Image 1: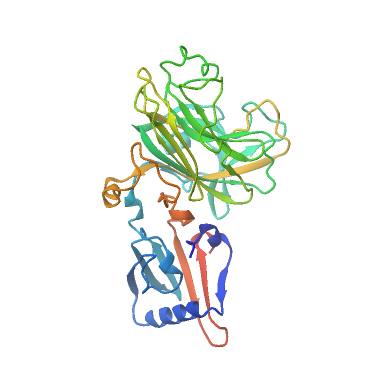
Image 2: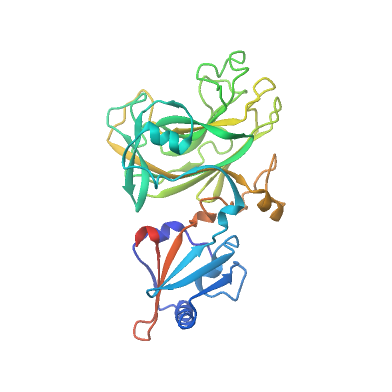
Length: 385
């Protein structure tokens, strides 16, 4: 059975009626709670002793804790889940002030700013049950007059990281003008115009971020030491590895492994909603004279070309993580890709966003059962109380 997708929980009410396994599960659970205030269950997808939907949760959610709370069960999706990761930086906008995103808040949230080309942007808004960053594209704007563009210093530079975030394009979004998405710079960085000139870029660091083309297709945009153009290049196969479906939250995670200085063995891999979509190998991101690590996080969402935007429209972002797997997790799973080893397409990537789209959130479980109604289990996230 396919793992539960977090998007399902965004719906106001998800019910399963007249399905005997759920009736049995609800009835047993209700009876059990008459005598106990809480319980713990070891959870594994292979554990046949666990009934209902919870048997299909990832093994990494080691325990489910349920408490009786005014007739509701509150499940905590693994309190130790984040111990699987070394979180280098994270931000989710929950503590931000609604309105213009001020420079002071940016510095508080991201650290030292290397630059901020659009002061006051994005907007912090309440959207879909939580505070989000709203990137607005005003009709007729281009060349730096929409979206967001700021870069912050990474306190702990690294030569191998994962980067995860969520994004949502409003229904009917017009991708007529291509846009840019978050990534990294190795400062001081290769700049447009330096790309095809090996002398000018010799001591510069590479730039890695994502781009959305005019058809809404995601691709890499990489400034690297083997490129032959004056702007970023697409990499891996296929170049256009995912077509955005407006009106849906999209979970993005990518992995960057910097090459050995001077040797073209760098790696780029990207997952969309838990599925590996693109792998690029043999990437020369640094030379023996440009040995920078990944040292700058870039939030770039502009639709920034010569052609102006054709309509007012918005996209939203949330849940940013720069991370690695923790030392303990790597010991526990020695076959997990690290260094210059690739993740295979069949690998279930575990990220701070959750596995295969399952949030690290608490869920309310209302269980009702009677012969007259045929039984019902309702799952609702805390976002949609």
